[in-house]
Image (cartoon, rainbow, N blue to C red; front, side, top):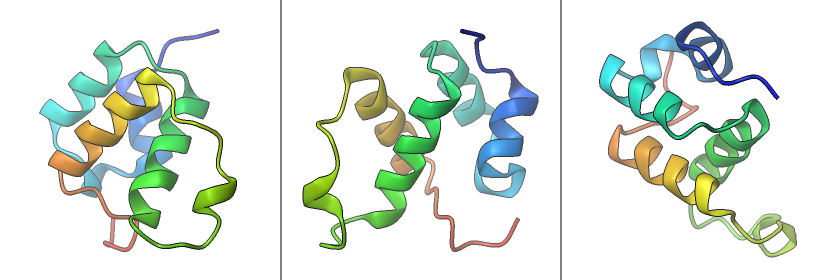
Length: 80
């Protein structure tokens, strides 16, 4: 399992969506690419009922990533 790099975080979620501080926090979690993608998916779904009940329980790392993304104002709907 390889650790996330700045370049990989940017390629997964887009540079225009996160500042350098948020990217550094994400890397410090030691998260995997899959965990970051899961967190981004959860954050963009918000309180939508579509599929939420079918998602697996959130791991501690994914919960931390969701918090980082939410505080950073992450939204896949924003342009890159």
